[in-house]
Amino acid sequence: MSLPQNLLPQPPETLLPEEPEADAAVDAARSGQTPAADAAAHFPSHSAAWALLADQAWSRGSVVESYAYARTGYHRGLDALRRNGWKGHGPVPWKHVPNQGFLRCLSALARAASEIGESGEAARCAEFLRDCDPAAADHI
Image 1 (cartoon, rainbow, N blue to C red):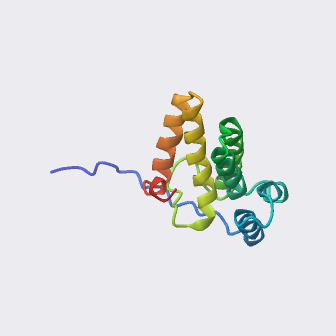
Image 2: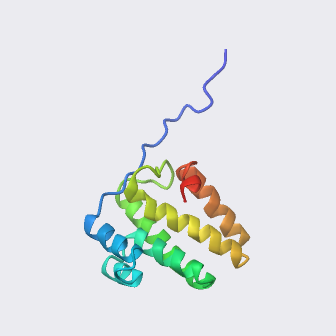
Image 3: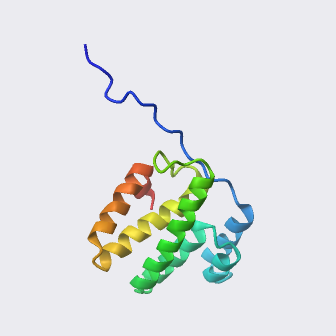
């Protein structure tokens, strides 16, 4: 007779709430209609704005700037996750669009940390991303 490997119930998925105004600001910035910094300034708790800034800085070769933006969005995302019932572990699914800003920041933070030689942080962020949603890295 074999026993189940994990007797503890898995935590439920954490689903961040939709933020239509913030998403519209990020979409406008993504399409070049407005600067991404405007979206972050008007919606500073919205991780998707910080993820966009991190990606734009990365594409310009501004690795430290990308790191700073990603770290800001990551921490703002952790705050949002906790406000929405996350207890420090459990699934944060990519398929739920409001979660994608946080997951993008986590990926950008891993990328930038690796580039500046913070290999431990890069590994922790990459593992955290897999723990949140194993498929997320494939989408980013």
